[in-house]
Length: 255
Image (cartoon, rainbow, N blue to C red; front, side, top):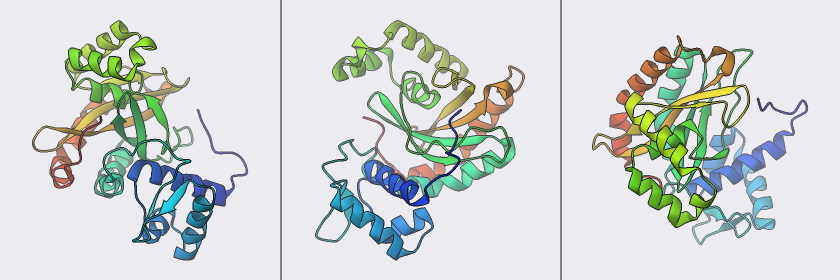
């Protein structure tokens, strides 16, 4: 499992978190940066100024910060990541407290999934914060949950359009997606990282449109067959509770 370095550099970590926010949200104000980092506005301003200096950020006429030329990844859902995180964090914290496992919020951008929020549990053996991580949708639990909402033809067309069909075992992927539809949740059992397993469901608004995916990341030693139904029930119940909040945001689905 990925752990923090023994001697983390907070200023570097803060700068990297701002890069992730710029990449995923598309725009950022100094006040938002300070709130997200838990720092003074002056500290956030100095960090953003350095990102501008290195071309990772630019400022518009309204003095908002935008991704610069050195940060080329497309934004995830039209600049609404911060809003989505604020709405869903209380639900994620409740789920984390209930299960004592790390909870992640994921978005799909094409054939990739992005981890845009994490609530880390307090157990000694745990999966760490995954914010900013990008994984192929074909193997992440959240990615599979969201891809399973598409028809097999739409999945094939998506991968052909992006050229990822040349690097993906499409037959295997479609089998995983069929199993996900039958179960109602997706599983990634140590396919992205040894010792880490995950389960995910789609988050939908009241219209039934997929907005994101909610995943539980579990050390594989606790991802037992007997426990999986408990995790799945908790995920489904949380997904049902957040429908009203998601309807208020109405962000577009992954592209």
